[in-house]
Image (cartoon, rainbow, N blue to C red; front, side, top):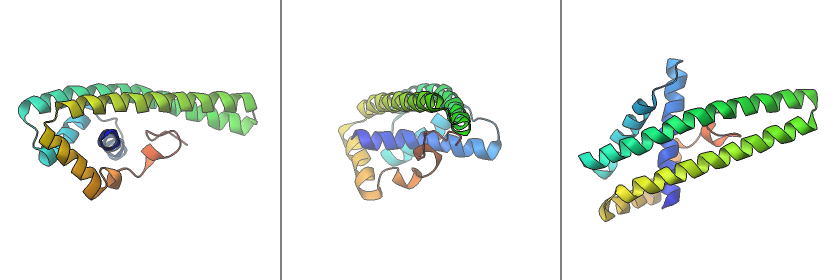
Length: 156
């Protein structure tokens, strides 16, 4: 259940990364959330109230993810610099920062997933679970920068 929702939120974040790469400017978190809500509305037949709730949940997670993404980029830059200097302490520090940021992102996404899942009717929850079992959930969308070292498309 949580795995499916993690994949849904991951899809949302990935959509933002891809949109950003195409436009060269960071997409607005509300735009990314709305794109994702449109997808979920089609798949799960969300009603207007659920769409509003999802908009709030996904906009909040996108705003948080943007800040974490920037911190992750800095941590990867620090890691690269420490590698180039053969700075063991710097490598340890950057690796710990990357690990902590990854844990923060995972927890934030899980909380958003839980909140969204609770807005669904039992029938919609079943559909959400079926998406996972029949189509691999969001796995088809889950390849790319989100799943590499550092996640969230961090610079490597």
